[in-house]
Length: 264
Image 1: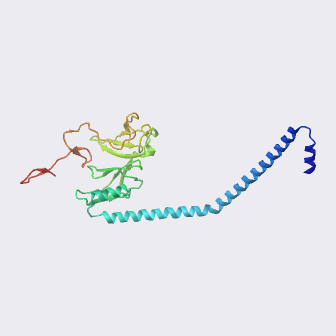
Image 2: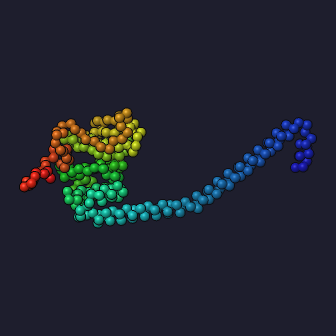
Image 3: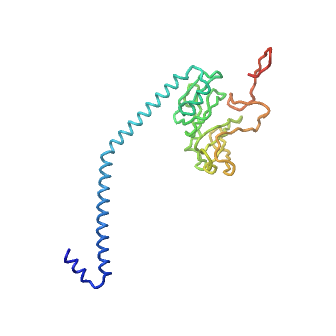
């Protein structure tokens, strides 16, 4: 090394000396960087090999814990609500906490009549009883419609996300309305806040076979829709409900009172 230094010192041009020293420094730096990178790669490989099995075990354990917790939560909810009156504020609080994992029907007093767990259902948004005794429900993020038999078994699943046109962007099946001709108009909610108007079709109509026969969306007017009410054919001077599946005038019973007449 000293011999090399003496030879470099005898060079007549300082720039040549600087160039040689720079080249030697770059070579040394490159070797150091390669050695460091190789060492880090070996360490990462060792860590992956060491913890791969442990990660798989941990993931399986976490999944099992969630399943146990979900089943326990469902059982607690069933015991808490089944056959009893549910105060409105209590039901609202539980729904906001997203703890109701099944569809249920209650009578006017708040007593639970029926409840069903539905595979793939995520944030069920609406359910109506059909004239044939089945129940039609939208499944939220599950992005399909389902008809349930009286015992809660699935009679039919249709309009599933995978079967819909990609441009539709079936994301969250929210409110729907069953029309007299058997068609269903459905709100396809796209997300919270502004900027979702062009991300998918906001409203579409399905025929009884589940095929899309009409659609509407306008990004200049809306960002995302979760509700729909078809006014065509309705007498807007009357109250309507969907207790028979199709929107129809509500028959308001009146009871005679010695003091006044009040709708019930």
